[in-house]
Image (cartoon, rainbow, N blue to C red):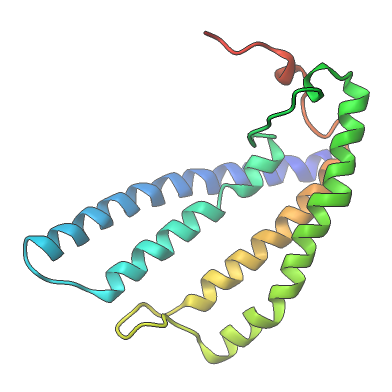
Length: 172
């Protein structure tokens, strides 16, 4: 299982790098749209859709890496002082009983919507918008499924995450 998690980590790291480039593309696109709109009085609906598409993909791609490396924000007053065995038990409980079912259920529920979207080739709801909204819906559903699988894989480890990093004080 650690080998599979290692592959997941490498792929998630690559997806995270792609997300970083997409954020740069998002910023450049936004600047170009503002200049076109307010300097040249040219507005495009596909430009607005492009921003939404870039933002959605850049937001979704790093999610598996966040779960794999436990990079989420925590506000745990008691958790920090618990021994590793209790932390591992609480993390497994959270992953198996809360996180994984929520992600799996969301992927399952969105399945019919994604299939219907692919069947009709759904595009932007606005005139002149970008096609391919079905790809974004499929990416979102796939990410929920990947997060559920990631949670299951993390639960197979003796310690889902590295707890030594949690106990170190941040540098001032």
